[in-house]
Image (cartoon, rainbow, N blue to C red; front, side, top):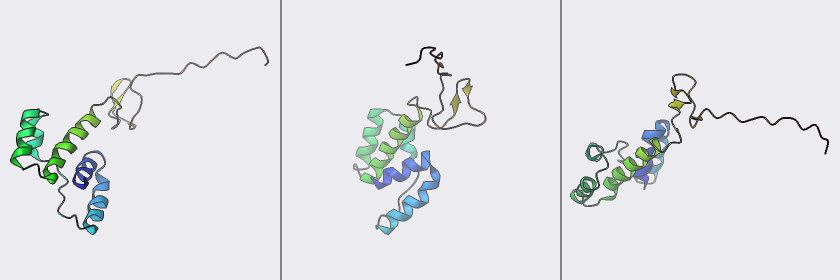
Length: 118
């Protein structure tokens, strides 16, 4: 699981990687690679390809972390929540981009004041 954390953090919040790897090293879990294996990326979500890679690597936990991290980060990047702030209501954001910013252009309606006292 620690291998997955490091690989995901490297994709979504790289400044956390030294913290995680340092902590895991203290726990005796060193040699955690922060990069997702290129062969996993080249499978491009193909179930048969990923299954074969898993078999070829004997389902070793540190290798399985590559598959889990890749699928998780790809989902995260394309789930419609605009987590990286790369979009705004006009399309691609080029300035003052904020994570999770609204992409629909929604503007709440301000209700008309009620003349009747309650």
